[in-house]
Image (cartoon, rainbow, N blue to C red; front, side, top):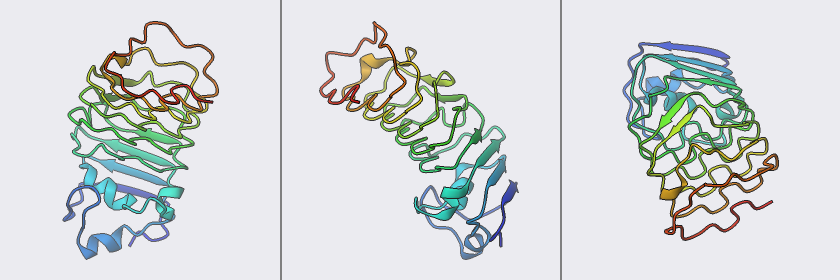
Length: 212
């Protein structure tokens, strides 16, 4: 059992799991009851291992306490929706830049990572849904390391409550968005809005775009 463990290094373990939020065998469940876990290192695994550790309960102690996650290897992961959702103590995150390249749904990917200061290099160029992707990421100043595509349709709350965001990202293609409710709401450090954001005529809702 990993109960009471603060550092956990997983390397080439075999566990009978299903996808994110799914079930896993009882032995695996016993091994990963680690509410005091601060540091998680996964080498050459798929993302089911990450979900076993974190669990599906977003109010769990293990999510609240985890401060560092390192994923190594050349794996291509299958789940991007809410992948790092609600890790409020997370300060450092590292993984292969193309790990989620093929995924189309990045909703809440980093949402509520309140202490994370730097977003790792991330390829989400195939995503059509980036809603709430960075919501409540209070300490990020930019998303320069993130590669966006030209087919993001849903941008609702994407940067909502990013209190430290210093500039509106200009490398995002806003022309494909059809909804952008509260896209930059409560971004208190934004000083200017650049020209040429090129929102589409198909944009149906921009309520609270720059609210607060």
